[in-house]
Image 1: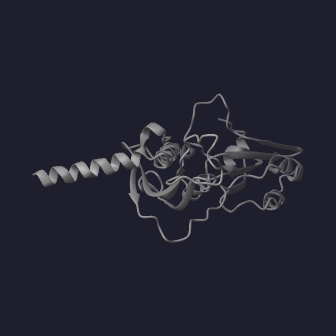
Image 2 (image 1 turned 60 degrees about the horizontal axis):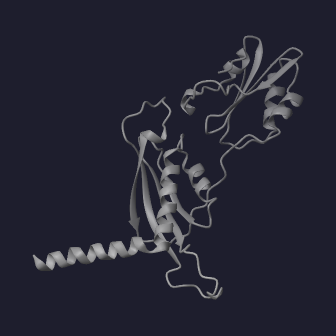
Image 3 (image 1 turned 45 degrees about the horizontal axis):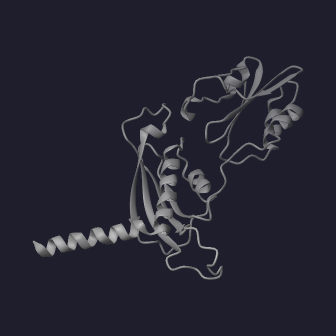
Length: 248
């Protein structure tokens, strides 16, 4: 019993020493920030999550992101760097780095739903929890993530200028193809009720509509800032809606 007590006491002393290390505390602070950020991703698009996290190159290395954040929990494997931010005295040599001034720790983070959420419902931070496990740092190379797919800034004026002013469906499709959009952006161009509808949907649910009928071209975003928040799955984005002039 005495030996067991000493072993437990030694473990507690080691843990206390680690958490008292300023560099470790700094790394832990960054880890807490990442965990909070991961709760807010909806939809959970692994490549977008990875790209967002890699923007903090000073403190984070991202090795892998997977899952869908709903039925399959979102998983992130990262290395977090921390450094001792304790103010140094004015007489301390600038070129001398104090022992333990920096540390690198690696973690698996599993982002899970705390309770069932309808597939068509928006997932909020309160709906998720993050389980954190410290791991040995991977030996492989960090992950490489493409930027999120988004409509180019010139999409609106381009469509306004290049869409036909007649019910020429093929000309409308050529105008959309000429934008050379990221394949991850869904394109829907069709004729409904005597009008051509164009719907361009980004992976995060944002949408741009256009419609054409004789002598008229309209381009608009269907979302309204004053409308109630909607999950990406609730944001339908179809050519039929565009042709009808639909807005949320």
